[in-house]
Amino acid sequence: MKPQLQPWQLLLVILAGWVNRRQQDAIAYLWTENRILREKLGTKRVLLNDEQRRRLAVKGKILGRRMLQVARNVTDAEEGFLHGKKYLLMDRDGKFSDAFRATLEQAGVEAVRLPPRSPNLNPHLERFVGSIKTECLDRMIFFGERTPQSAATSFIEH
Image (spheres, rainbow, N blue to C red):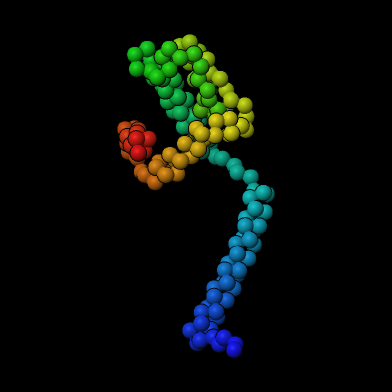
């Protein structure tokens, strides 16, 4: 005895086929759009005008001053968490400038730069940083310095 499809089962099969065709059409469209955008971006050069260059320079100066203040804070004789420490491991991010490292060295802390492209040197720490970003910090809007600190503290306690 051959099983016979009920009308609702036939409708479900037709609907699934229609959805599958729509998905395939959308995927083909996105592949084409992606290829076109890559071609356009590959040939187009980004030119900055004088105002945009000035803004980037100002942002760089502000970031540099902020990072120098961070270096002073972490090596503070009373409350700095690097007080009495000899080494600080850091990646090769541009925010850890020569001036930042010099400030650390003045406080007696040697800045040890990790090798380039070595994300697996400390996979536990990398996983923790990834988790705190995706599960906590990327889901919130912060105003001021205290809110991200309290959010991170609550996440760590949790």
